[in-house]
Image 1 (cartoon, rainbow, N blue to C red):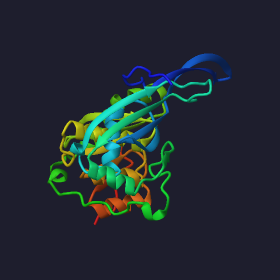
Image 2: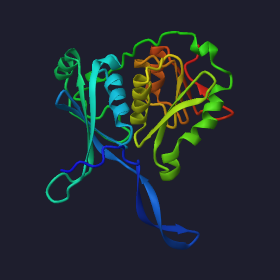
Image 3: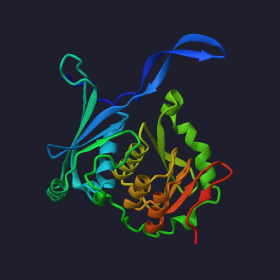
Image 4: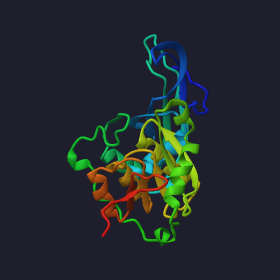
Length: 279
């Protein structure tokens, strides 16, 4: 097993394709989004293997650790190292993959061992691998009222919808990645992260906000996906006051948002959106 360059992978690879169009056939090259196994190792013990795009993995690991309740705050993580491993088709590891090693405070590590579960995360799945329904975390924290929503510009959602495509460079190349963006009260996109998994993109965004010591109650999340349970749950855990998605919400996402006091907006476009569970 060989180490690859420790810099992030590009997020896409080139593949030769046969393109059919209007009755004609041509050989061409397409860019395809990377999907790798990424092992998250806490204090030397592997806890989860998630399938994700091998970019921004330090932010991903921090975000995952917090949104999954492994640690309570960024300061509970003492050290992070990212290793990229080369695939070996001669009897070794068949796939290139990455490992993220985190050193967390002892209290968090003891709690993790007590409830340790084997997660084999599939693309697009945020809770694959839990051992029973009882382990689902359906009791979100209440999002604090900091006055952010009252200050939100009337056209903030429209501005975010208009600006997001400019931050989706990997999506433009591959057509197959999700984006999670952090927007301010005017709707300006300040940060954006992409991944083959929508929950991974959100973890990368949240991890980046934690690493930058941003106030997660003073902005909103804009997602190029549907609003599912785990996306709302992850956002509520760090006090995000509003989640906006391009596609539809699920019934459980609406329920979790209501319990958390989080504003949920879907079908967001430049000229329209739908808000859920309004009183």
